[in-house]
Amino acid sequence: MPEKPRVYVTRRIPEIGITLLREHFDVRVWDSDDVVPREILLEELKEADGVLALLTERFDGPTMDAAPKLKVIANMAVGFDNIDVAAATERGIVVCNTPGVLTDTTADFAWTLLMAAARRVVEGYKYVQEGKWKTWGPLLLLGQDVHHATLGLIGLGRIGSAVAQRAKGFSMRVLYYDAIRRQDLEQSLGIEYAPLEQVLREADFISLHVPLTPETRHLINAERLRIMKKTAVLVNTARGPVVDQKALYEALRDGVIWAAALDVTDPEPIPMDDPLLKLDNCLIVPHIASASFKTRDAMAALAARNIIAVLSGQQPETPVNPEVWERRRK
Ligand code: DGY
Image (tube, rainbow, N blue to C red; front, side, top):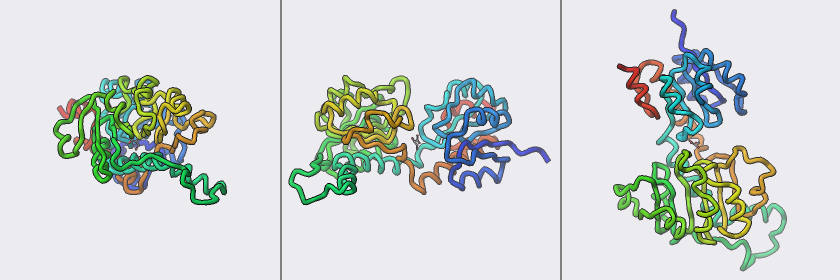
């Protein structure tokens, strides 16, 4: 019997992904909740035909060169800034991601952060826990109204659009900026396009939904933070480096903006001595926007199906560099 192709899974993931892969392949798993050590990853890649990877593993040219048999990297994430796609394309490796299946869950969570920061939920929780709640207070933990406020979206892909859709329920005005204007969506979502600076100037809440690229690194910097309202709340469920974190710290400390809520930081995890952790007006959670039971199952299953497709000569559902698969097919 010919040997089954080898697939390496770089972390413990929802069982459905492993089960699907085991039906076809010889599957090896880094069976841990911690990041796979680099030397183990490199060792495993020597024999791998496919890898189910996470955003915590860097796949650059030299990593791929350590994987002579590798045909597919299936990232269990919609973002793929951890992978050098050009290097993969050059080497004939198909890269896949998991768009679509996490859109609504991530949009829900952007709203969770927005509302929590606006209405100081975590501060209120701590206040109670610390035994400070003595009476109802007319001036206690006042926050920002969400209803009828202006929401500014930076990036109008799937997730940005789903965030916009939810704003209707709060009777908000929604402004968006994207490198590509989406006139087709403006009417149905009830949103207005505006240049970046105008969105930053007019929005009460700014939510980031751009991928991390050289162009979006530090898109939110000191200068742009100064354009925002003093009462503004910044929400980041995109990627940490989209925000210049030192500039954000200074802006929050000095009252340049009112609050921030971050699902993502730069680096991750955020070091425990980072000054942002000392600020009451900065809410930070550990990159969990897509972390619902159903969505993580769907992400694991999609990543597994992408590997199965590529290794059996079929078109993967969600390739990032489809030209590699096309080339291989000819
Ligand atoms: C992604 O998919 O890129 C998220 O950051 C994790 O779900």
